[in-house]
Length: 124
Image 1: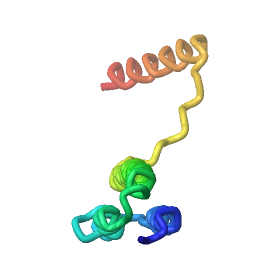
Image 2: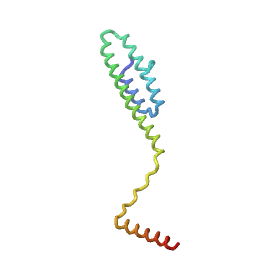
Image 3: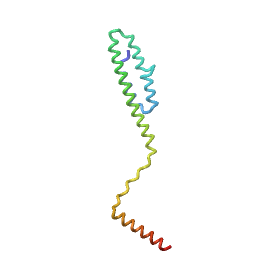
Image 4: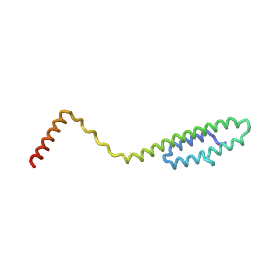
């Protein structure tokens, strides 16, 4: 039977390098799919002597759980990165905030504009 700890280490290393949905799906098929390495290892447990089966089954289930959890975490990270990449170009560049206007300055500016408008209207 295949060394399950070695299988787990190799699978998690490959999973860490999966950076797209396609790569994740290929990884899932290679390790957790119907003909995946872990599935084949689980099927081979039945060929072990009866006294070795419980321990091997328990270890295989722990490996399956670790790989499944690792896959879900990596899939969430890849989805989040894809969403961020999709949203990033659509954001308009942010302008720097305008400086605060003092109330007294605003009154002076308003009065000036009002005077200029009144002068233009009176000139007509």
